[in-house]
Amino acid sequence: MLNPADSWPSKDEYMQRYRQLAYRFVENFKKFAEGCPPEVMKAGPKV
Image 1 (tube, rainbow, N blue to C red):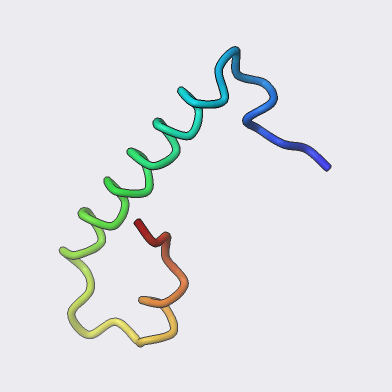
Image 2: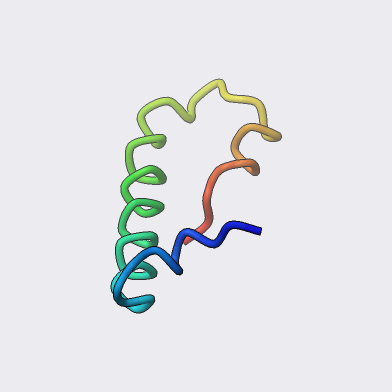
């Protein structure tokens, strides 16, 4: 299987960027959370 972290020179840097992106997604999604079905809320990234 493909592993995106293997394409980065540093797996630690990849994981740091991965977590930053997930955090930004969670924070941005808060704007749209009201009225959103619970299954959609559960499907997003967890940080």
